[in-house]
Amino acid sequence: MNFFRDGNGSLCVEWEQAFGHRKRAWIQRKADPDMDWAKTPDRRYLNVVRVKDDGNPGGNPTDFPVWCELEDRQILESFVLAVSSITGLKMKS
Image: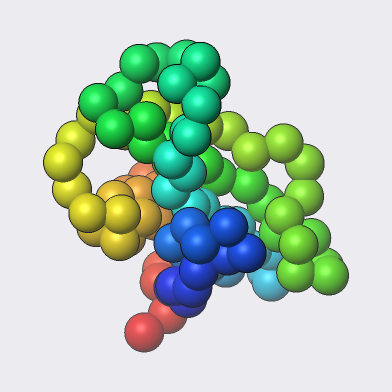
């Protein structure tokens, strides 16, 4: 797992899902309350998307409303580990 901040200042994580194909997840805070479709407590959403060969996000991200009080890094790390466990991916150390 590689953690970094994107151009918007959001904490991101990238990891290899399989055979060099990478995924990216980040925590987004919706500045506009009208864009907070799930009416979350602090307008946080977990977004996930594939990473193209050029290193940029590819396609449309899927967003999940965040209802818990975990810190952003804890959410991202838990998400990657859960998805990897479910899909059988062995994480590199």
